[in-house]
Length: 152
Image 1 (tube, rainbow, N blue to C red):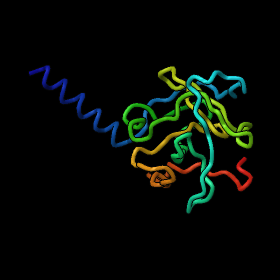
Image 2 (cartoon, helix red, strand yellow; image 1 turned 90 degrees about the horizontal axis):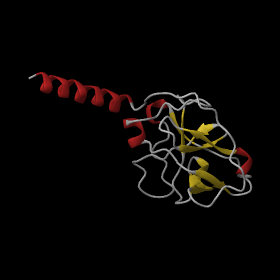
Image 3 (cartoon, helix red, strand yellow; image 1 turned 60 degrees about the vertical axis):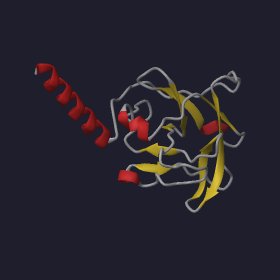
Image 4 (cartoon, helix red, strand yellow; image 1 turned 30 degrees about the horizontal axis):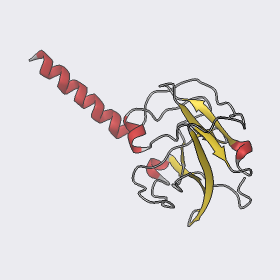
């Protein structure tokens, strides 16, 4: 009986965490990645023109997003949130016009997450094709990462 109560409480806690779509924080600082980072684990960054303007994309052409509750050095989207908003992990491999603004930060689990202008980057799980921007404005805290017409 006690085991069932514990499992029920754990399930309820997981449901609440999933509904809130955010998790724990970390105080690790953002740091720029060296231009000579090894090819392993690198993620290409680029841009794509959309109805929302020119947006930042990963190497597969998927739109990248930022989360208002993240701050430089603090990642709040973990656990169930990171299932809906998968973090962009690895070392950035931006084109020359994006390189000065790309970097990485350490997530609470120790993995490296790519940043742009200090903001950790995410994909939206419901974007199923390159160029989609369905995550923009979700809960008023998720936004596409736009870049100016010079791509910088």
